[in-house]
Length: 239
Image (cartoon, rainbow, N blue to C red; front, side, top):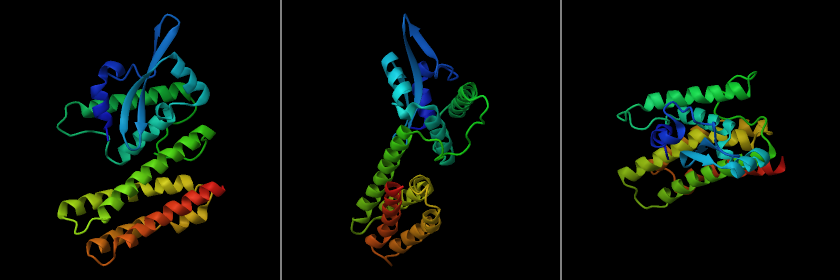
């Protein structure tokens, strides 16, 4: 996972000292390039420069979804909420880099949407285009599948040591933290399903404690997680 401040520090020639180059056209004759930030739920942050053709397909077909303004802002809000936006506190200027990025995102948003307030939530199911919905579902599915696979690999081991238990606990807590986001998207048209799964994060954490105390086995711990995934995905297919 690449932190935002690490990415900005490493790509300062592309972004500029105060992120002023983000979203700015760089012209050479008739052709232009633009630098964007890109956010991925598993990989974190990246800085990319798109050429004229890439800019065209991005605008017309909605390609390069990870660079779109709403995705980048959602990623910014999401990583801020999860406290994984700055790298090590000892790293110089991390706060300044993030502050400059925040200011630049506000400036770009205000220019593009002068009558809309800057989004403060990290996820919203409203106003998704068809491509946006498809891309979002793929990202969420991949992310949650990776989380579940990592948990399953640990629970399959016999006699987890202290370090492995700590890893398992962190991965389960990360999944539980992301679960409302998954449910909000895949059960957006089923309020009764969202209500049904409201207490599942707490139940999953309770089962984690039982698993650690050897009161239950791995399949019981994994059952609630799989139940949420399967029912939410099935709900989305029927919507």
